[in-house]
Length: 305
Image 1 (cartoon, rainbow, N blue to C red):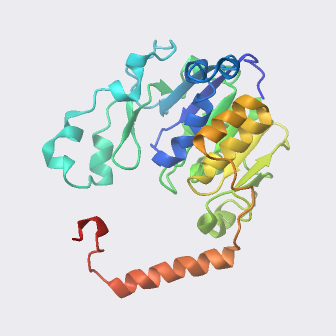
Image 2 (image 1 turned 180 degrees about the vertical axis):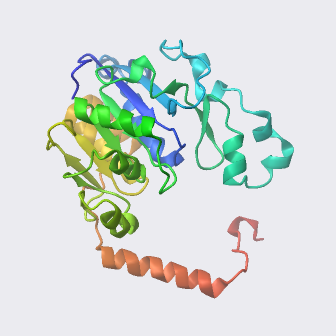
């Protein structure tokens, strides 16, 4: 899986445009492999824990980087929960209403990146940080940013260089746009959110899009372009199933089985249970129901007497 760290895992999570929070859930499965997490389990299992280091990348090289010298492992004090949230985020004028996308983007300071559900994550590394360059990482994870966002040249170059080097790349949901823009999907099989596949086939015609599988592993190589394993997933929580399959394959045995059992994931299977046509019919039904409701507010069941 890695050319650089056989005794542990070094992982970067690319967040230059923020991400869907649930797309991030797969990184927690990888984090559960750590010695710190496993130490709470019975002795024989805890002894299997790995050294896991996770780098959250929130800057593309053009953006200011508040501490370019900070290349030390994260500590408890560095956790996202301890990050200083900008005053605008906690101000009472914004706490009670949805924050427009542009305004919300302005609230993000140097080391914070926005997730969905009005959450923030500390992302203190840049695509130019020495710790996240090819040869320093085992895995690059790309959770889904807002669909269609055009990534910067620096971000795309970062992804290309890791693809060419042979770093394993895990792509979740609309992270496929980032990977496709970088060109690392060209000539390879890839999954994506089913509803977006028709558009993706037009926009990125060199990619072999698969809308029948929740996740796809492609081990093929495109010389000089994509040398490493590439895992891609469909929408949102399919990323969890992908990471579960990934750790079971790469770290077979009781540790990966225990992690997936604790998280209760990894049993959906690689293939969808329904066809694209059935899925489309379901969505059409929901749209018609919403049209019938018009502008009436949905009933909040927990407020009923």
